[in-house]
Image (tube, rainbow, N blue to C red):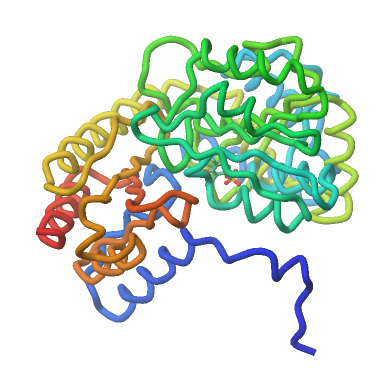
Length: 389
Ligand code: PLP
């Protein structure tokens, strides 16, 4: 009776949640652990969003909604795509789900057949390869490196595409590296994709509002409008509006794909949470000015972490352009520690929880999430310096 499916056997549990859970266990046992392993902002959800959720409950918005979200929510998502990403879409090409994660899950499950190949730049967000494998697809890693800004090149993409390639998964700004693709590089990738009509592209732009560079955010559907009919852009409120617990994600793409995702959603979660949708409408339609303040605070933390890491012998990191992560290279320490998982456990012993690069398809390093206040970050970096000295 304890038999699980072959599909489940193809996947591993999330490495980031495993580390967060382990840190919580140690804390519960009385240990002083600083957790820099989480992927969520430490800021409170904006009060007008909370208010909208309460008002929705009081107004009786507590029932099933349309499968792909309420009309109001789809309009708010379309507003977000237009205002924040420059993507103009009718609401028929927008769908709402329980987090960006569910949108990605449904898109891949609805389109992959056994043997279909999915190109994923590594280091990658932990869930991409697992979802691909669960859906029966084959993961094709496209390794990226600090020296190349943790971005893949057009040549690398061209060399990896085969007749079986079904998807390219792009994530900018990226988790776990913070790497952000400029318009020119997206155009170069688009030039390669143009010749391969079988390839769909997922553009995961969930961190777009949290960028530190100047100028507008670049995204494939805008840089290469002729490819927009095979691009699914994924976004949400989890990161930009500190709403991870609300579980609302949004996606925009070709109508056939949106309909396929909704067909699947009609039998999985049924619809996104009615109360969370009301909150997400307030998030997208309400004031956005707090974001400038959050960005500034994240930028200060980023600078603190990057400066401190690069001052520790054996560790180095490039400056991330967006999101709230930095990918630390610890290759010079591998002779002493063996591998990055051993180093992560060693750091945990010294009171800091981070996630080993191998959890993201990388190697010889670890990801620091700087979604913590500056005093906490400074103490964590002191502990890391002590642990590797
Ligand atoms: N995409 C990336 C790159 C992420 O880092 C995350 C969250 O960790 C998600 C998507 C999904 O976020 P959510 O399901 O909370 O919207």
